[in-house]
Image (cartoon, rainbow, N blue to C red; front, side):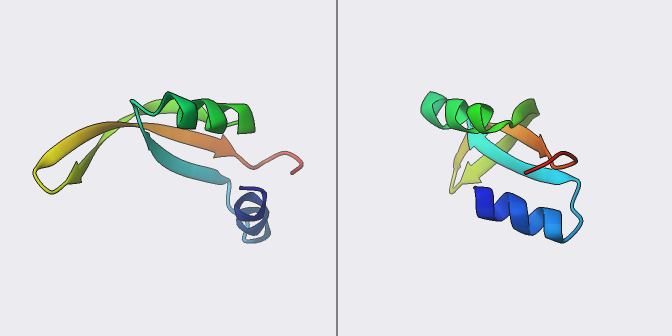
Length: 64
C-alpha cells in the first residue's frame, strides 16, 4: 500500500480510490486503519452474481 500511495503521489494524483466487498469487515478495517474513508457503494458483478462494495478514498495531499 505504501508503494502504491508513493507512486500515485509521484504522478501528482490527488488520492487513491478502491472498492471493497461490504461483507469483508477485515478488509474494510485494514483500509480504514491506513486512512481510507468510505464514500459510497457500488455494484461488483461476477458472472450472474452481483455484490455490493464500498467505495473508499484516500487523499494524498499530505505527507506519506
